[in-house]
Image (cartoon, rainbow, N blue to C red):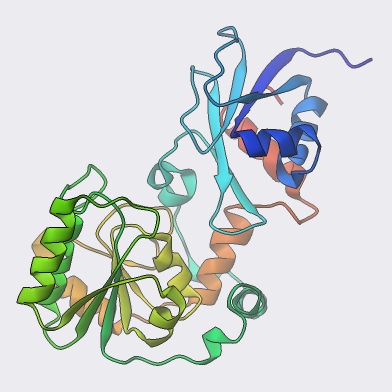
Length: 302
């Protein structure tokens, strides 16, 4: 019978808890195997459960982990890519702070990887691309608030698009899972009425990525999706996939808009680096060693 030196609680949502207990979640099962091999007793708990000692290690799905021995794990935009880190904020992750060197990535290998994932995620949609004079602005929440990771509020971001790209149409889309206040909707409506080049819509990500010139957002994952369509991004907020994007600086906004319109980064090399070298691919043979390395990175006894 295995003897355990430490206990780890894996905190999950109800549906994920049921899946983990049944052994039906591949990545959680692999994390548990690595932890058990290192001498941890693995217990699955719901988020909010506080029945533990200060000596218990905690691994939390997406939400901030309680206590000093906590880490989070979450999917890196698409399955089977995952990350284990210490912060719930992606822009504080190791990958966000890492230096990206495209010369260190095999072009041929990256091209195969990129093409396969374009087809897997979007079928033939990435073969039918154009630049129709559109700035695509996927909006998130809190439209009139400048949060700590943003350089301005989303409404001000839209105003800056209108001011600094006077030749293109601006199409902003509202997020389907956000509940916007009447005040926020009124502000959007006024901006749309006052600017004939601005249109506010709902949804339609794939057609927009097919036809836009570039993406402007705070840190929406739509900008990450845009990389598969060869569309550059201008980011007004912090995020983990910023390395090939143009970063908005309020002092040099005109330059940022000029640069994003001209940007042509090597998307294939970047996505290969971001997913295959910086994330954990749960479908690869090295998944267990990469999981163990992440726990070791944060001082867990492996």
